[in-house]
Length: 221
Ligand SMILES: [Cu+2]
Image 1 (cartoon, rainbow, N blue to C red):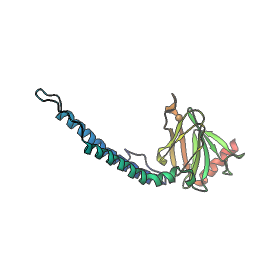
Image 2 (cartoon, helix red, strand yellow; image 1 turned 60 degrees about the vertical axis):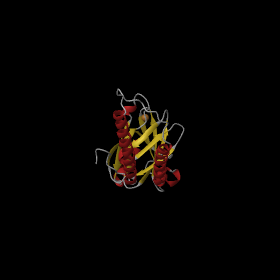
Image 3 (cartoon, helix red, strand yellow; image 1 turned 45 degrees about the vertical axis):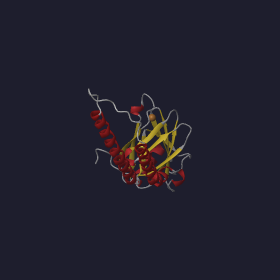
Image 4 (cartoon, helix red, strand yellow; image 1 turned 90 degrees about the vertical axis):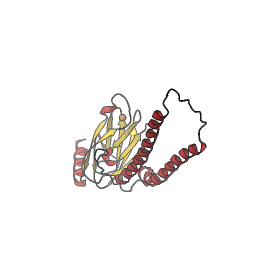
C-alpha cells in the first residue's frame, strides 16, 4: 500500500508499521463513531417549531464509559509499544559495533561528520560533507544528532527514523538499512523560513562501495 507509507528499508520498520496501523485503525474507528454521532445529533435535535429543548444534566454512566475506555486503550498501547520504543530510543540499547556519524543540523542544512577510514569519530581522518549522507547497508548505524540554532528533526521515512535535534543536546539515533538505495533526510520540524529546502541526499551503499567512497572523500579533504 504505497499510497499510505513509503517502502520500509529498516530492520525495525515492520514493527513500527504494525504499531502505526493498529493506532490508525483504533483512532479511525473512534473518528467515524464520533463524527457519525455528531451528524446524527445535529440532524435529530435541530431547531424545529413546536419542539421544546429538553434539559439534561448528563449521564454519569456514559461519562465513566467514555473516560475509562480511551484510558484503557492508551494504557494498552503504551505497554504494547514500550519494548519497541526502548529498543529504538533508549541510548543503553544502541547496538554494539555500529558505525558512528555525527549529524549537525542548522538553518537550513545538514552537516554530516564522517568517521573516516579508521571508523572512529573525533580523530584526524574525520571529514564533513554538507547535505550528503552515505552509509553502508546491512549493519547498524548510530548518528549523534546535534543542532546549532533551533530545533530541527532528523527524518528518513524509508528507515522509519524520526528524531528531534535539540540545541545543547547530543542525541544518539540508530537504524539498520536492509538494502541499498537513494533516499532523503527531510527536516520534520518547522525551523524557519527555509525549512522547506532543508533536505539532504541519503545514499546507502554496499559495504565495499561505502569504504571506497569514504576513502576517496577522506583523501580529498
Ligand atoms: Cu530544520
